[in-house]
Length: 271
Image (cartoon, rainbow, N blue to C red):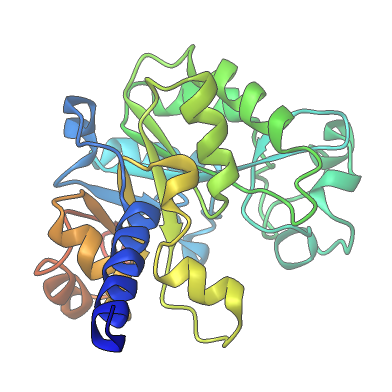
């Protein structure tokens, strides 16, 4: 066999491997409630109006204005599922410890972003949202130590919700948990065009981890959609959700690429 033939065969095999790694799940009818939608990022929050992110008031505002909602979930020290984005409490509560190091009884005493709002339980947020389509991001710690517990408990709570919901995560292993244990739940792989040059970000930005969880949709950073993996997955017809648009100009540009959008700061000027 000639050198050219060997190289062609090698490229062919690598191409097949690439497509195997990035291939998502087949599009399902269950995606309908989440396509062509605007998701209020962490609720329709407005710090100037005293409405913190991921708060019950932010979720009420989103429901009143008929927006879908994106929210984040984490585990507390005593295993409660709360709605909170950051790993630590410092930015929003002025405490340096992590959510995972703090029990819920302590968390509920902390003012959220200098307001009277408190960090809500996921169950409390769902009661307020009351049927609004939800995009639920599972925040997985680097150790992955409590991933199974977070997936299992979040799934159990979401099952009680009377509206449509889907889950997403940067962790392909969280998606894999749902693929194996609750395959009927719509799942999305979060990623972006990471700028830090290491092997992990290369794998993530080109979606070479899709084989682990076979996502139903891709949630991708709108600021750069050039990575080959994203473009190919989009070409395959996979639904996409762009995050996070913060201006009408960004929204107009993103509409050329994405099917749905996570936004903030666009529709809460009157509050």
